[in-house]
Length: 76
Image 1 (cartoon, rainbow, N blue to C red):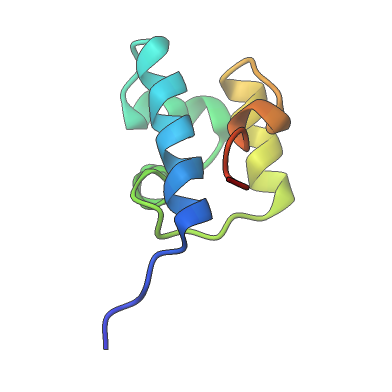
Image 2: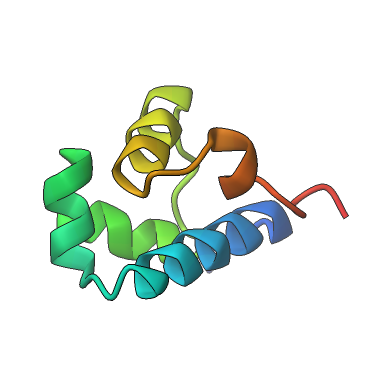
């Protein structure tokens, strides 16, 4: 049975991808800066990972943004 992706996770992943691409970084580069695994970043961007607040904070710091910015629009 395939996993259903939550709309909020898909939107969060799109926000991460957009900000990563704005920095002109690869997933590998973001993973290095956020101290996360590249496969984890890939899963986030595909909306397959339900992150902890610690992972969100690491991503926000690496992307030089706020956790709120990463979550922007997910409640619509």
